[in-house]
Image (cartoon, rainbow, N blue to C red; front, side, top):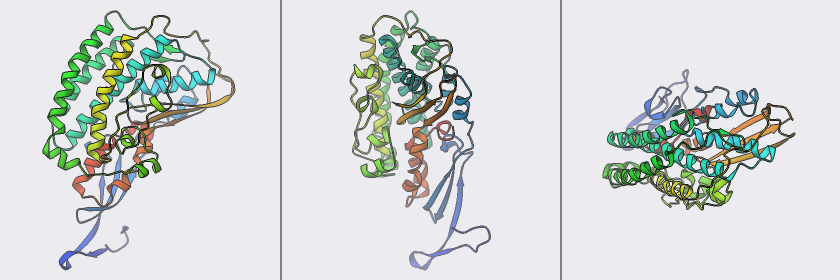
Length: 380
């Protein structure tokens, strides 16, 4: 790579033409990086020869904040990590504290968590698909996706009091029971979403331009996906059947079976298809959980000042982007001695340089968007 003080390097190309190596910054203020991500790319002509992600522009010290907040107060800060999946973040943190204290939430709370978690998975995937198509030049899908997501946010507001930073999970269960008529409104939304899902499928999947931009682009073979620690739709799109809801079931997933969406494509198109059909599977899981929703309490009685016994634990959930894990160390006080977040966006980002190498500049956005990164979870 040519530095500031070095003479530019020239390569002998086809028909004797010489091309100068160029360094190009994409971001951190670029709409298609989905946050403040900076990619430093080395180009030879239109081909990417090297790519270095530069992160840290959104670092807010969430892990350190968790260590300076009581166990119950820390739940609220989990919303700011993957800010498109707050319900899932909170479930992971609450589950880690419960595991540390040996608490089992009531069955009704576990079912409510499943319902809200799968709603959040659909909401996250709607943003992933809508913004992905916007990156590739299609404007209509994001309008469809945000129209459907708006219904979910309204339901979140009814049950938790907030649309975005929900602060709904609690150690031992959930904050509020479901409001009167809430399940009926959710059922109505699901009925509408069945038709909306078909609209999205027809609008996007068979689109010739979209298929040309994504099929065969950013291919990840199964061994490579495992070696890089990929999880979630990225891993399953490469043919690896691994889903924590099935392989390490937690909560109500131990009673309601999940059918993971697995594809063999391994490319950007396969990752899109995984997310599309995961939304359909999430809708099925919500319906089953609603039908089997038990009565009873929504939270286990816990002391106001939680003091888990000394020890350590790791608890992970299947987030919208992969394995979201929380590692906690307790020293017996009201505050965690150490809190570590295993953010899937951060881990999934590490394969980006490998995927970019050898592709044309026009494929960079198509590859990056297929990873579905949230920079709040990368930087933390």
